[in-house]
Image 1 (spheres, rainbow, N blue to C red):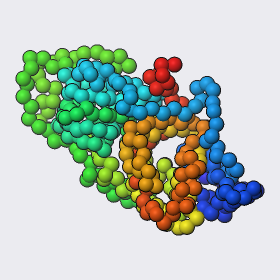
Image 2 (cartoon, rainbow, N blue to C red; image 1 turned 90 degrees about the vertical axis):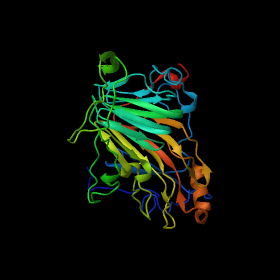
Image 3 (cartoon, rainbow, N blue to C red; image 1 turned 135 degrees about the vertical axis):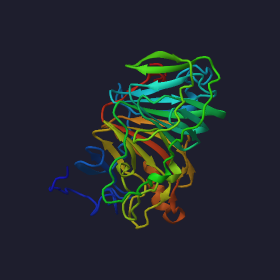
Image 4 (tube, rainbow, N blue to C red; image 1 turned 45 degrees about the vertical axis):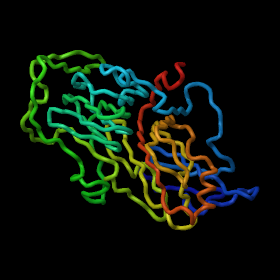
Length: 366
């Protein structure tokens, strides 16, 4: 909810995140640091600081963490009957990593919640009772609660980031933008029923129920559906089909780029786009303290200001902690204004309203 009252005290810019004033000592610009409620939708304060607020050391649980997905080994990497590795969790969401190199020898049915898997690397097909869904790098594969399915991989190993939500995943409302923004519903890939043949005497369905796993065994192929209709179905969507919402005069906050939401969870796409063109605008995201959301970011690929980003780097910033690009990136963006026309990053971001617990595997077992 916006308030009608706003104050400006001390040395500030006329417009937030534009034409920052010099520090009193001279020689450098002040650092704009935004403290916000409800992501970026609630009350906010922009603080103009002399020093980089992200330079600090911490003790205890309240700290940022990061890891390379390639250095985490779930049991499903080497064992077809293995499982994904839990990375983060709270009462609303669990974040998983799968690195499956062989197809599932069983089917799955998750009765605990919806699943959204981002394909960082790999390709194959998700067999579902609604029909098969081919997948490739850059896809989201969304499997609503209780739908029977299995992952069939081709070629090298897959690297999948899984977002399991207790609440139902849905598309948010984009007021005033029209039905085709930021994606046209026609680009969502919905499965068609396909003929299947039972070649096994028995099929296993591994069921997740109340955080425990059980088995169902049937004497026919679980995907024997010949037709379906309704508004409850699995689907795939590739980030290349995302329409980035832009502004020439303001770097838009992540909340403008939400793809799917569930209770206490936002899934966000930060994708390539033209840089802001109005001189004086801060092109690099400002320093930030998100008072109400933990933030997870997966670098899928791309570069920033001509420098390659680290594909597979995943990070977690708890709510209330300072984070953001280092100040040297902001200085470089101002100095090389005419050298860069686009921001080429590919980042998958997850916001959670409840604090996340970090799995010990990301903390070195501590």
